[in-house]
Amino acid sequence: MKLRQWQAECIEIALTNYNTRNISHFLALATPGAGKTMMASELANQLLNNKLVDLVICFSPSSLVAKDFGESLQRVTQMQFDGKMGAKGNSITYQSLQYLDESFWQLFNRFRVFVIFDEIHHCAGSNLDNANAWGQQIILNIQNKAKYTLALTGTPWRSDEAPIVLSNYLQPTNKISCDYIYGLSDALRDNVCRIPQIIAVDNSNISVVNGEETKVFNSLKSLLNQSTAPYQGIIENEKIIKYIISSAHKKLKSIRTFNPDAAGLIVASSVEHATKIAALMKAYLNEKSTVVTYRENDPTAAIQQFRHSTNKWIISVGMISEGTNIPRLQVCCHLTNIKTEMHFRQILGRILRITGSVNQEAIMYMPAEPKLLEYAYRVKEDVPFEADVVKLDTVGADTNNDVNGEVITIISNDNSLPPSTGVVEVEEFVSAHSGNGHQQPNILPDENLLTKSYEQMINVFGRFKQEAIALGLSDLK
Image (cartoon, rainbow, N blue to C red):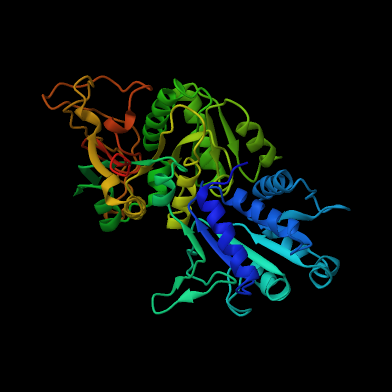
């Protein structure tokens, strides 16, 4: 396979560091979907062919990613990578680090070993005192013992701000020092990654009614900043789920008119949440979905089956957010309660891999939660300003939509919660009126329900809007 330009450059610099500069560790930062696995596999191939190393060991954050990496190494090198007799190495998980015996670690004394760390940010520690379990094993058994090491990441930081193992940091900024950087802007210029579009669902007029007390908010940001309404309640709300998945499903259907095998990913917050989303998708969209969580008998097999099928939707809890290669994914929904920038970018990265299909759209749907919006705008800033297009779309602005112009009020019959909570259970919808005062009929399941009602936990009136952050390349050519 012909290397992309960035992959060839990265390999050349790594080999120069190893051979000429006598630097044994190399950290490569490349945006998710850019092809880090292929680059690392070819680097291993060249080290083996040039008789610079004897064995290659790869560590990855999940069994599925480890399997993919092993297959890539075997395909590129045409050598065996299953850890068995005659193999040139193995590809295993970071979880395995704590269970490797002395006979394994003796390999580093007997052979020249090249070690690949995929998504190195999972391993923390500049020393044994501040290291996590995986970082400790790397410091004790691999650092200064491996012939060469290669660390890969698409998100070079940790949510807990702990140092990443084997890494150097620049002062006074305390930013990680990378030996090679291939960012999203580079990948877009080279047509290596799809252009992301992030749809943030918000409401411009939110009224929280609790007994005699009413508070009005003009956005999710003001609601979450000025009240005790929990974000978990927002992403678990049935009406929000229906709205987001129906919008995403509509977009996926349009993409599949060009790419019949295009698929969508929904990242949920818990097993129960994923099950609920799957039930709503079946009940209101008449669509079956694949659910993958740690509770499944063989989630890896389910993901593999989905990867090679033409099924539309897969719902995951912590199984597909990082490193998993399913190129036909083009739509995703961020419905998890994990609100870190690393997790956000890893989810977005699942839909950025370029394929040979006609349509190369990549769309993420998410609630307009303040931190998520901040991350979205940082993604936008990663692209040269000439490419940035920010537009505001009002859901009710479509003149063909019969909810255009409506102001919706939801009334609660539950006054049991104290006013300080700012949260009221909604037992049923009493009425919904249009701007001209005429009462509207009950909402049908196939309508955009979130336009008519916000969430079960709070009373809301107002129309929803979608803020579309679109990144184009028209001025980059």
